Image (cartoon, rainbow, N blue to C red; front, side):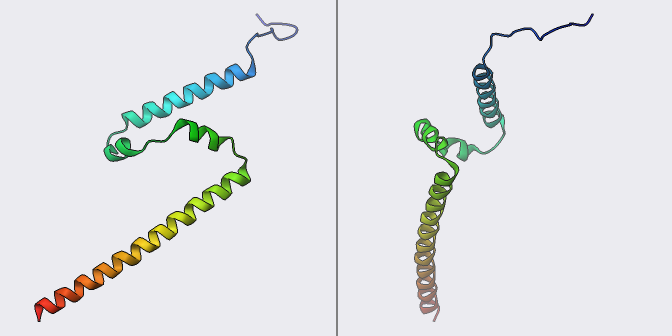
Length: 102
């Protein structure tokens, strides 16, 4: 048996379907993350404020790209200063070891 004529009207809005799909996606991601073996430390320490995440998702592409660039620049400068300090500490420790061995 085949239907003839217009498609039946469905009283479900597009937004409702999008909402259901988003909820399913979030549930699937959480389930995958929680059921994945290992990553114990990551699971303990990775937390994010949901309000901040939703604010970031509202940014347009240009603003988000600018923000990510600024964060990466900050992380790079922090890492570089840490690496310099660590290198200086390692160099001084090597010097001390050389003095002790003489």
